[in-house]
Length: 433
Image (cartoon, rainbow, N blue to C red; front, side, top):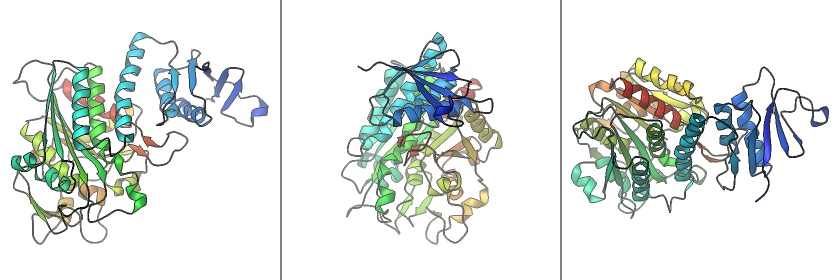
């Protein structure tokens, strides 16, 4: 094992030989991160972690008294590499801070492991089962779960997951998980989380080009993120009942795959014409939202890597937030700010539902015509499957859950971004339930 390199935050400029305004310098067994009064310390810490990993330095220890909880965590996010091998000593810190960092590391580490796993290993039933085992292991005796697969989904009326997944030989699967720390089987459900778990997305008959398909193992990022968020909330002491629904399927091409022109009839009677088989995420989420509604959840949050339109609008830095309820959307945005994550609200209006017109069904699964807002119409589609006109529902389009190419902040792959936001939101709504 190699000796650890100490990493120190300092407020002096780097020696001149390192270059004007150098942010990083080295002396013996130390790396020094040079800060100015104008610097965003958290961002600079993450950039330093990224640079050290890029240099092949794999064993580091955070030293000195200038490290905060957030700068330590940010450094760890930059230092992460999907290939593994990193060794990080957080340094000297208080017990409560150590517990918080360990909780984040457990939750986000699982999320990244799932997102970065191969689609051969992380298939629908495997994702659902691993999520159930992960949460149950954090709260033994307080968690129960079950899965529904294949023809069972059709029999139970979960037609979206069934239809999207029937083109694969590996069965589509719905996970229903109940975290109930109260011990009362009749306790109200404070919140429900719903995640899109498309473990590989070829686009179906609306097939993707190879460049777009190459990263589609990450299309289960919503399912991974809401699972990680519940894990973090539990580790932080969540004491309210929460249900988790993961809608898992592979969207593949075969003689049995669903087709353009098919019409799906959901449990609530809504009929949907398929105009694009690559708009499959909303089809599986609809089942999860109906299940969450049937559970009587006071609040529902769904998360999904749903649209390219959200990525075009926000890039890979921000998650998009949609809700008909200004207060609820504001709570998610505030949770993101409190947790040093990034989220941005995009528009959602009742008229967006009308832009999903169909000549043969209640609505189509994509908009038709010019000038339609793809991310907003996707959210509008989901609004047909939640109670009370969507007053207690918020949708997150996870533009920032995956980094296709590395940059100065993130290595390629899953990021865990959004886990802290949703965990904080759960705590907030739990307090008033």
